[in-house]
Image (cartoon, rainbow, N blue to C red; front, top):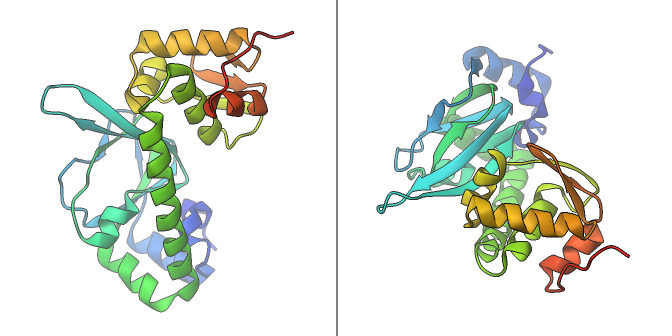
Length: 226
């Protein structure tokens, strides 16, 4: 098997080595710098955009000139599978935030694989169900107190574990994603840090107390450390 990144992308882990090698040969990956647009809002979703490494974010520019950031994802991952499967249009603009390795596959190839590989079809169905749940949680994160929104985002991004969570384009990027100003994000992070729940670094938040953050997310105010 050739050493390529497709095998590390969750949706393709169900494919055998020969099929992965053939896809990689026919559709080579490209190395891209930060700041490259991979898909534009309202463009036809006729290709599956695979991010094998690096980080990208989704945003939508509103009519009044403001920007809403929907999500930040780190490879290996696939951008906007739902739009590709529906044969519709992208609902956000996806842009690289770090150097990335990216591969584009025709939508017709994905549909062919779904028809012929049952394990891949099951994976896609699970993904779409999980995406619905993530979208619902994202909507909730855009309401409520700043501490609730920040705690909720951090827990999901950190998978509710102790550890380091990279911020999506610094504190301002996190604000765009959860509907807050940079000042409000900074104030919320400082409050949570003063309670001993996390530590703030320049581009990373270190989760120290997942249960404590979950209590804030679930409605309990952050308490100062004993």
